[in-house]
Length: 580
Figure 1: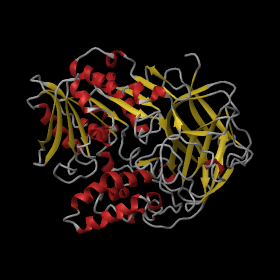
Figure 2: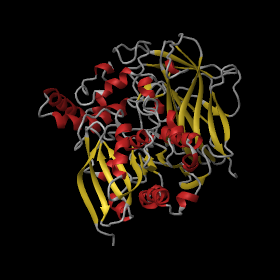
Figure 3: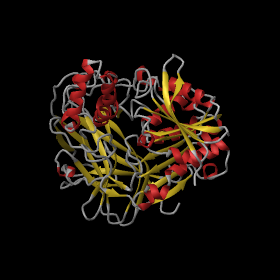
């Protein structure tokens, strides 16, 4: 039987500017001074399991920790005005140092939490609070421009709208409704829009989106800063890895919307963090999407019992990490290999020494066709043989009829567009989706690591998008998406300095498809889909070359993909030898 736990509600946590945040404390009924585990949330501290997604407060308190959930500035019980990301570094520092000095605390603080609660950890850690000794950020990003608000230059439309509508703006509007007529009016629009969220994604231009002015004005700040500039640089974690000296366990999912950032945070800390923090950085990647392992079902695919919460005990993994770094206990957190990955297809966990894996064979699969790779019924092929003289493939991208999103890294309203693993067969029926497949594999092929597509392409438009998706095509016709990516042509060279294209000119595009770990079984095919839209996951490129999000004008674009001796478009896969 666990010990008696004392729960104290709405304790005051003063900030340096006089704003008072509110926290809920779960602590053992003991005179012993104990470490603090902190979660800072914008999602209401009254629901700690929902807010953290990853750690049970009672279990942690029974393990000998003071567990504190704090409402972010301007959220729920806390004073002030919430401005997404902006105050989290300073407020995080003040919260950590205040809690470390409490009579029930021993001066050591660890932080935990998922998604935005991961962002509150990283932004606080970048300010270097002396009492912060360990972190476990889960399913969160490394950069709040590329990988959170944008990806490859495209606006993460469904995430930004659904997250802002359901998780951020709604709470503020309800809070201000009694005294703010504009908030009351916008609240009605938001409530009516949730059930028709998918239809709301069609609105153009985005700068005139019909909500968020009262509930989440920072949404329009994001639109005003489409490129990586000082606005985003001030919030970047990647530029501050060398300044963060906190042992960090990064937890992510292959289908998570922030998968790329989770891995970049691990690699950045491993390479740049000072002293023990770099050596102690760890990474755990499961087959999950943004809800983490609430079950082993990810989209439409059961990833196997070993990935389920009962099997992995994610709470226990985190508490072991804190036990080692906050209490000095010798356990697996100290001696185990730093990388733990779940290999889909094998449906098993594997410990590794680094990421990417040692001994990886970086194998090029070249695009081939006789000029008719359109849809799964075309003649597109993937092979390790380089192309010779081959005709290009072409398709028409019409922004008014974009390729629909079907799974992948999504958040935050699955009732409208769910994330995870799904059959892509219907998407592959479209003539504006080029499909390139290997022959049926004669033996198993494991692909584990970062995926990159090098594409040589031209367009009739001065600006457009190119998308890529890696698919495991089974012999029974089920084509399971693994990972994908996008590049907006104007940022093909730099996220900071956009350059339009000369219509008809061939350019090289590099599409970062992030990472995966999957066993393509014998009889399956490795498949690549290439198109120009993935909507509403990403906003539609209107192809006009105008300032982004400013008008509603669109035009079709004729896209041409080259794969010949001079322009050998290819997919680079990290193939793991059978015997390493």
